[in-house]
Amino acid sequence: MQQNIDTNRVAQNLMASWQASGLKQKLIFTFAIIALFRFGAQLPIYGINNEVFQALAGGNNLIGFLDMFSGGALGKVSIFALGIGPYITSSIIMQLLTVIIPSLERAQKEDGEAGRRKIQQITRVFAVGLALFQSLIFALALFKLPGAILPGVNPAMFFIGSAVSLTAGAIIVMWLAELITEKGVGNGASLIIFVGIIAGIPLYCDRTATLVAQDTMLQLGLLALIAIFLATIIFIIILHEAARKVPIVSARRQVGNKVYGGQNTNIPFKLNPGGVMPIIFAIAILLFPATVLGFVQQMHIENVMLAQVFEKLNIIFSANSVSYYVIYFVLIFGLTFFYASIIPSMQPKEIANNLKKYGSAIPGVKPGKPTADKLDEILGRIMFIGAISLGIIALVPTIAAKVTNITTFQGIGATSLIILVGVALDFVNQIKTHMLAKNYESFLQQ
Image (cartoon, rainbow, N blue to C red; front, side, top):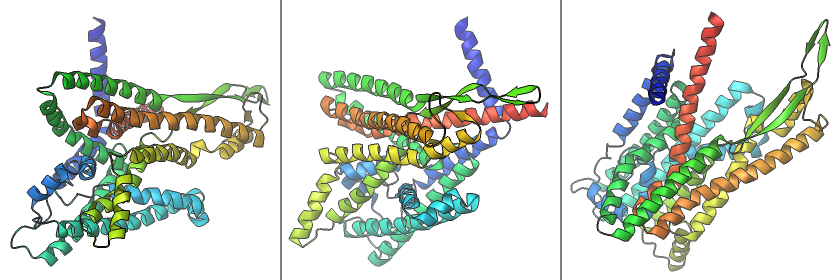
């Protein structure tokens, strides 16, 4: 009986979310843009021999790793092969420059909407430049790859056409992501990566089934790996939802016969305020040099010393090396702190000033600078725990995959699992927020 009541309640909540004013249109728009992205991921560039490149991708871990985030677009050498990578890399660089360059920092904090639009426009222009650079490298690698060009296709036209098509595809993906963020539900860049990973899951499942079909030990290893995946999902949800609540007391003020304030509240600081973004940023930073080095290696450099340097760098940034995961962990750790530092709700000085302005304080702490120092200490501890936890969660499934020898499932083991859970939680939370806002508006209109 209780189960039927819970089922009916879930069904009613789903119907309410679908009928909420504006949410239905946003969801339909989001799914339509995602469908358009998946359609473009199936369109190969002109003149490419897919079989040759797919054979190369099957034996290249770097290409396979990149292909996972493009939803198979890279393996098909489609016009969306670069995916959302250039845009995310550009966003990371601009956020770093905003902290370093005072004029950009003023534009972001003081110029309001106009300043944010200016920074966004610079980000787009820089993303186009990165896309063009990556397209030229990719086109050159295809040009040098034996058999990659179909017979009868002019090599020069293939090189130019490939570079232009890949650049245009990256710009279109960037535009689609911004459309989802502006008019749909969720963060467009995160959702595009999410969809790309989901699209690759059937292939990973098929490869894993083939691998363990005739081996009992591997089947036991697969069960252990799935158990670790489930435990990781639980810890990801805990990390995503956990928060430290700092108590706040308000001073009492008497105006005439009425007394205002005196209520105890709290400020919730999330253990992982950046959500999935530190992971995505870390991947984007690692993939850029790995992409360049991987394709440079295919070009057969004649200079022996230069070739050795590129070979060592390629080993360092290889997804199978220990150094890769050390760099990955350090990037996640640092980017968690960095992302928290640029979130307005995580600024100790501003929070302390606002508390002092409205006559509120932390119990036992003086207003002003002592409050800011106390908040900075609390946030430092929270961020340290959150960054370490996020880094460990990112590495545990990958280590488990290597220990159990189920490497065919590794693609959705570490990084992808965090992205899938994080983006899904953010998507659901945005739907809930939209429903609450609409319910509140309906209440005010009554």
